[in-house]
Amino acid sequence: MVTRGHVLFPVMPLTTSVERAMQGKPLLAWDADKRTHVGVMRRGADAAAMRWFEAEACHVFHVMNAWDDGDAVVAYVMQSATAPGLPDAQGRPGDPHAMAARLCRWTFDLASPGTGFRREYLDDLVAEFPRIDERYAGRRNRYGFYTCHATARARGDAESVLFDSLARFDFETGERSLHTLPEGDVVSEPVFVPRSADAAEGDGWLLAVVWREREKRSDLLVLDACNLGAAPVATARLPHRVPFGFHGNWRPNV
Image (cartoon, rainbow, N blue to C red; front, side, top):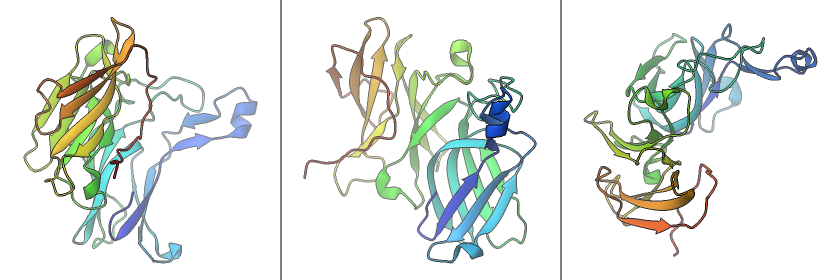
């Protein structure tokens, strides 16, 4: 995670062990006996000056954004209690509900002598693949976007990444709006496109590839990011399936 003043290095208790694998156990496994650590280093400083914070075991694959807030550093992340889809060191499958990620705020108080940091869930929907208006990367953002299930217990599988909805979250008001697909359809990670170079934060479009389950093909949706619940502004109908990817970006043709 990178802010204008700091770099954050999260270290999760997701472990690898060749010795364990040679015993027929998982090479990659969740170790709930360990804790989660986050190193916070001022940009340009020596690594020896890094300050370490820690919390009970939790996991984050994807970060939405982070920024400096006076003597604190704040980050929006998709946090789960355990690593999604991975067993423990003995090969036992994890609890799917503990694997479900949700939008969470991490706060690191740099003025405090302690090593703990505050974690607060902001949304109850199972979600992943957070995105922002990239012009606000590293500084406070008001809006965030992510894939999610339309209800907290959708599809009967809390860890499923077959998401049926896109969300827009307003961190100033706490309001969330959804665009939910027809039953059976699945949406991939969205990409935000600003309406213009000087448009207000979050004013633009969301692009996302969706799988049309009944028709066995894909579409590219263009949604109004300010009115996510409305019908798509445009739909590029594709005659075949496009495998889901993630972490793409928009580049204007200029």
